Length: 398
Ligand code: SF4
Image 1 (cartoon, protein in one colour):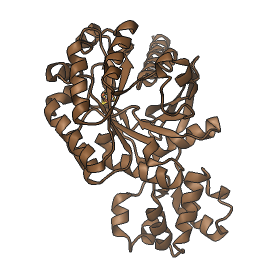
Image 2: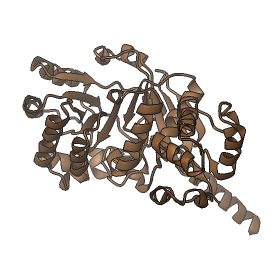
Image 3: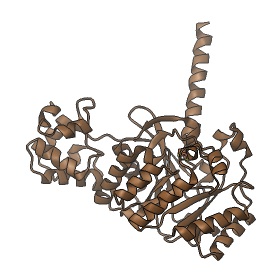
Image 4: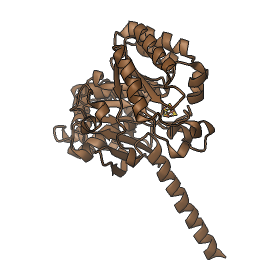
């Protein structure tokens, strides 16, 4: 039924294969919704109305779309759906950080973390946060992740699949619905490497910036350093901000922490970030988790100073917290957090060199806020539950 409507729009059909014979509208851009309206004999402006209802008014059913004529709504009900991800758990930390656990259509799970502004006040290291009013949501882009960074819970899960554009967008819509609050900033730093799901991530940013009142300069995409995609972002002049998980400027150390560094060495990565900076004229952020004795030496400070002389940038220092689910790994068991006084000295040396440096707060530590931790915990619980059901039924059979 639905594909008959779309016959004049073959490329559109290729992009959106029929799923259960109905088209999921959540995840379509303004232009795609306008094309869809035209394809079913409606006026183009109907697409704009749909766009507003989906992303601005956060409608979850066609019945709610009161400004849309009934015959059009009937057509939509017959041919389309509005898929939603389901909130199955919300944990709130003592510092106000909230972690949302979602279940997707196929039963897989992801998480998002809402970071309140007051953590910026409470954390003495974060007093210089540029905007203390912001409410930031950290979103996921993949279920699991194939890159296996040694300090990361998500990495230890392996890779299950990429999220759809609709699933990325819906994390924001669901969190807004549950909290009743406007989200001011987004970071693509949850489960998964965003640049491995490049097209959907960029499409979600297009929808968010045109329909959800969050400017591109308030959106940060964080990568472990995928060189071709950083170059692509530069060439496409993407307006969102870029953060790179750096953690060391020494190839030997970096490859121990991030296996992808074997493919993209530090020289190639830094040259590409320089190219990005020259092309888009926006300062990148370098993320730097401090590990005791590994990347917190004077030599490392000097390397960071040298880097920031070449590329004007911000540096985010992140205190390391051990992630239980990765402790079986040899390298992880060797990773220790740098003591607080040494973090302060490290940061001070960078500030003395006039570098823009922030210390990320340890928000949500008591609710497993680091990406992937809650999903892994829940999956383990599920496995245990299933194992006990199997054990139980076995006893009954016997
Ligand atoms: S840190 Fe990011 S890229 Fe690395 S394994 Fe975790 S989710 Fe993947």
